[in-house]
Figure 1: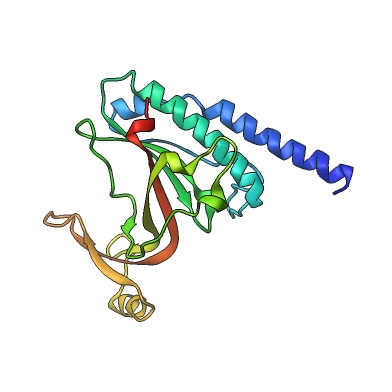
Figure 2 (figure 1 turned 180 degrees about the vertical axis):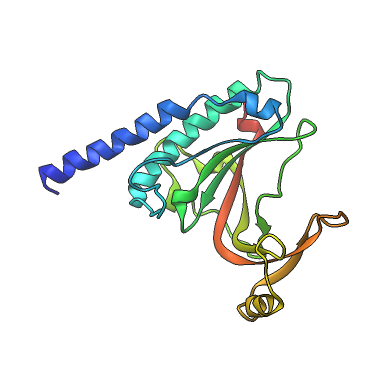
Length: 205
């Protein structure tokens, strides 16, 4: 690698540090107003309208900062009496979409598990792929879920022919807002795997 490329990658690594400094302190007010607090990988040039993955070694450096950020967030949210569920989402293929998410819950110890579709596959977290210097996947409990492409019957104004085409292309049918006046059919199929991680209790503060 020539000196020009080294300087360029050094600049890219500094962007991770800037991103971390900008977002390491969470906005607790969002949880208090029943919103979820989250942080995405808003790092140029990877996170744009057309998103693309950085090299895996670079993403591991991001996960190192995610791990440090998780520790800070956990400490900050524990200062509030409001119960929360702190999660790391790692998308297996499109890992530029990964997030740190703090979801408000009703009671201490509850989890929010309605962000993704349940996955029928069963396998272990790809530790060797994502393990970094500060990010140790073994400190977390991981649940495998599907990230999906989803269309709603009403909001996407699907015709019966459109629905038939989706079903022919292996989309599954479900319902949202069951039993309410807003109930409608949804059509979805898996797009990627996403690992939902929660800190093991014995490793939490």
